[in-house]
Length: 475
Ligand code: FAD
Ligand code: NAI
Image (cartoon, rainbow, N blue to C red; front, side, top):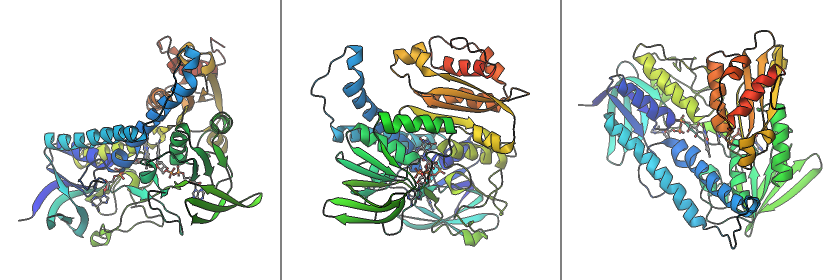
């Protein structure tokens, strides 16, 4: 007899594994289909985020930042270090250990919550209630039944036609997290989130990094004041060579060199590099999923269509995370997973898509939540703006992190916080306070009246809130 579940989740990335745990907490019998294998061929949970995304990239960020601190920042503390070297194999092994610990942690959580991990590729076999899903794994094909299916199959890197990714010399995020030596010259196609984060990692480890970006503007999704200041820091102070408005013409291997031919406003150009990262966005993963068997299809961009509650057109099929519209972020996928599990249980789970924070883990970090000043202008919303720099905050100076600022946008009449934008050390931590302010419909004055610890970076958030009313205290 076929195994049957109340809820079957396809995909165990942050969307899928969190949906499975929440559904189990709510009393459902839950199965989760996951096909991921590590480079050693071992099955693993955690999806893109834990295996080749958020977690390994942040491990390398920290290692490379430590190296840069020793080389360039320790001296002003009176700490001298000689003959500093990088053992890249050890650095990568540390990253791999963190990944293994995190992914095996999910396996433990599955056991604790009595979630059955079905190892293999999941594919819809037929619709109706129960739905039938075929799982193709090492032991062959098994068919399972479920009253509800949550599709959480995530995304994969978008590749460019004519550029063969071998993950050794020309890599997407997967290879770029495992280069076995520091390239002398590193090229990156796409100056988006991955390009900036991983480009910065390899720059700090010694590579000369050139980013080739199709758009004429730098980081257009961020508030303009932030992207302008970040541009100055990344290009002038850190030496990232970012070329905007380029059109890639062709990429060729010439011996050990990769030659990228491109065009910009100066005409045809050629760039020779030792390794190349292609980071031009990601595409939803629906290959071999059998959507047609349940009467579903994808939209023009390949996403599964859903409403604000992640419901598809088929009543007992839901889709969450990178495979549906909205930002491709792990915390967005998680929150959708919680929402769907709760709605299946008849609860009122919801996601506030207007309060999802963004973080770019460069150094300093960039983080924001809510509207940018440019969006408010386009929408004709009247606003007031307050801004405060880290350079006059005692904790930031003590940490040697004076770069950047916090900018708060609040409604001109009601003072309600509409957007918070941060460029600075630990912006990823500071932005949570802002996300909470947005969720609770706080005013800038509310933030300003909250007692913030001294000395702390969070005082800059408070001062920016005071600055909305032109009454910052320390400036
Ligand atoms: P995924 O994590 O992609 O998981 C989908 C899972 O489904 C995979 O394990 C896949 O094997 C499985 N699957 C697919 N199809 C099938 C099938 N038919 N049968 C069985 N299994 C299947 N986001 C952040 O918020 N913060 C960050 O710092 C961050 N850093 C990132 C860094 C990098 C280098 C990359 C590439 C991404 C990063 N992201 C980050 C984005 C984040 O990883 C994704 O938004 C997140 O993983 C999406 O979660 P998901 O559950 O939708 O999909
Ligand atoms: P991205 O969308 O952030 O950036 C891709 C960049 O490539 C864009 O600037 C785009 O204009 C450019 N581009 C596209 N085609 C090009 C071409 N032919 N030539 C030159 N440039 C081209 O995508 P990225 O960096 O690949 O990351 C994918 C997604 O993963 C992100 O959108 C984000 O959702 C997620 N992510 C999130 C992180 C975080 O939260 N800190 C970190 C890394 C990834």
